Image (tube, one colour):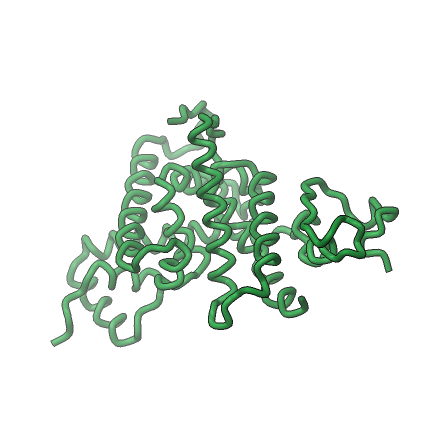
Length: 106
Length: 179
């Protein structure tokens, strides 16, 4: 006899992290308990909706402010910023805009 | 630093997404948060634990920075902009209706307390395991599960209330009072 279905199982089911056997047990349970099934369906739709709604942010081009290469480069003493301290740039300064600064110059 | 580029750079879009969803803030502000996170990661790169997961570590740094920022804003009586994540996610949806649903969902997300919102997004969107979320948030897994459960239920209730209170057709934009 399998262990009783728990709330954690329901969330594991929604998040698709259950082992196949447990998933089957949850599905059997949901077939017998339509109210719970409705709630779980709501959670699943919500999860799907959040992924679709927020997904586009991760598709945006990464702004120059967050260039890792530039941050690392800015810490090198030869960059002329200082003894390896991080540069606190918040504007859109970019190589093509400030070539005279010597950052990233070949 | 080449391994850092290889390990960290692919995470930047997801970090931006998490910051955007967590903060009730404009997009530019959240990128500052991600920049702070990356700067810290660079500073500590050589001290990092060999057995540590880079993604979990970066989300932990970002999460803590975000929570501190939110606390500072609360103390200073920051005016919470209406919408937050809903306004910040500006990508065009496939249909106008889908866009409305997305905005409503994100508005509902903004209404959750931070501790529920963070778990919900880390698990549902960022695909962290429950154990990884527990590490990021520095709480036991049991706490992750209870916050997840409460957050999902609350979000469902908010959306159901929205659906019940609104007509089926497009509604005009209304001013929304911010708590």
